[in-house]
Structures are given as C-alpha cells and as structure tokens.
Image (tube, rainbow, N blue to C red; front, side):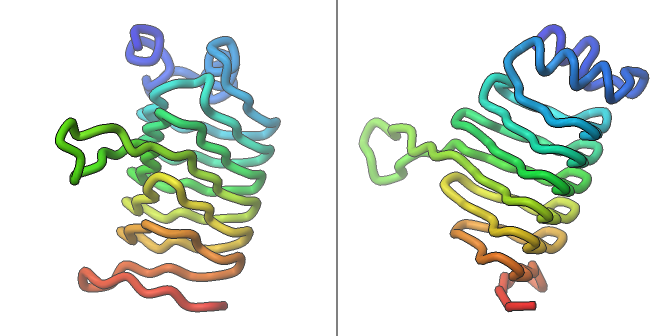
Length: 154
C-alpha cells in the first residue's frame, strides 16, 4: 500500500516503472502494457495481464481473488473490476468472492463495473457505466443505458 500510494499511482511514475514495481510484488504483466496513473490494484500477486493492454486513469482492480486480463484489452478510465462481495443472506455476512477473466481484445469502457465471477469473452465491449453481473459472450456488446443494461451480439 505504501509503495502503491507513494509511487505507483502517481502521475510522474512512468508506465514502464509501474509495471516493474507491480512485477516485483508478484503481478504478471506482458510486454507493451500501459498502466496509467491513479490505477488502484489491491493485490498485485493476484493480477495477470497479457501483452499490449491499457488500463486507464482511475481504474480500480479490487482483486481479492485473481483478475486475468488478456492481450489487447482496454480497461478505460474509472472502470472497476471487483472480485469481492458478501452473502447478504448469511447471518455473518460471509465473503462471496470469485475471480474475473477478461479475454483478448475486450474493451471495458469508462466507469463500467465488472463484478465477481464474470468472464468477458474475446472482443466483447462493455459500454460506459454498464454493470456486468454475469458472463459476457465473445463479440457481445453490453450497454448501460438509462439505468438498464442490455446485451446484444455484434
């Protein structure tokens, strides 16, 4: 947390240095990946990123469980990928966590949220502000419009 807050998230830290620091803490990050400033990654050792992936400013990867991002992925500004939840029916409010997988060529647009246990199929688009609670097929488009999310095939 100290290294992340003091160096990794800062605008003056070059993306190549960011990637090296995250690798030093256990992340697997491919070549050509650009992690912009102010990106929050909870546990680097539970992050795997392919080649030529872009993670935009202000994105938050709450990876209590593993998050896997393929190659040629774009996680846009202020998007959130959250692997953690709780069982609201449990008297002790137990954890209900699960990993997230984002396959090659996916675009998760600005302020979209992908929740635990979701797999986003190759080349899918998750539109701005969309809330994704279940798997997205390859080549699908998920839109968040007027508070309603709909899925369509491209």
